[in-house]
Length: 116
Image (cartoon, rainbow, N blue to C red; front, side, top):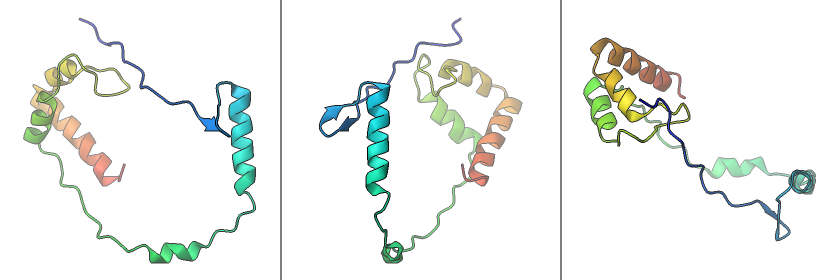
């Protein structure tokens, strides 16, 4: 059983500066340096932030075991959910154990509580 699968890299668009592609490290540094120095002495009026309306803070409901199982089962077994390359098939097999699922739910809810 493969523990990891190849992950396709996302398609990206090259950074442009003065309508030129930045394809070398030197051109990227030049672009960063030029962009930073262009904005260095521009004054910013922070009072513009006063015009932003306050929005009501919403809270997340804690994850339930059933909700977590439904979400996990909606994914293809061969796809990978994140950078760790752990496949959904492996995660689904973990979720079959109630104690392990409880631990994952605890971790997920801790992320919410810590506002990650």
